Image (cartoon, rainbow, N blue to C red; front, side, top):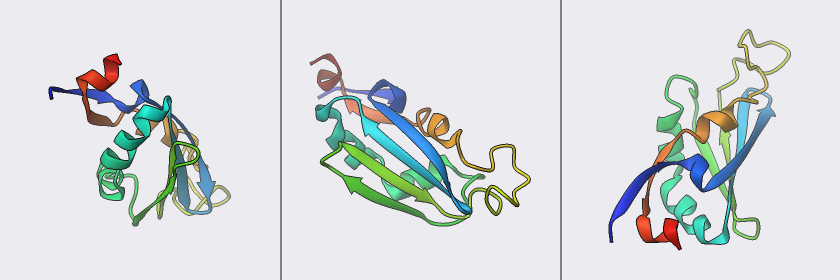
Length: 113
């Protein structure tokens, strides 16, 4: 089956915030049929690579199939956290926009269904 390279924003929503020095990023499938694609494509390693230069620790991934969502904890990402960080986004609010720019491969038939 032919695949197409798309940005994650085409099939998902996201929210993010801080957990101390870690960024917390939730990715939610726009439709139930997209959730398996998220599970397959958004591995902890792929997310770590996408945030290269921002995330300096490990990435943990949690699956929430009943919500059609994945949650990622990006350790050592926020420069110490909200009260001590000198980063412009010390609370990680822009991480959700950043992850939605991530490119993934998807079956073209799934997009047009």
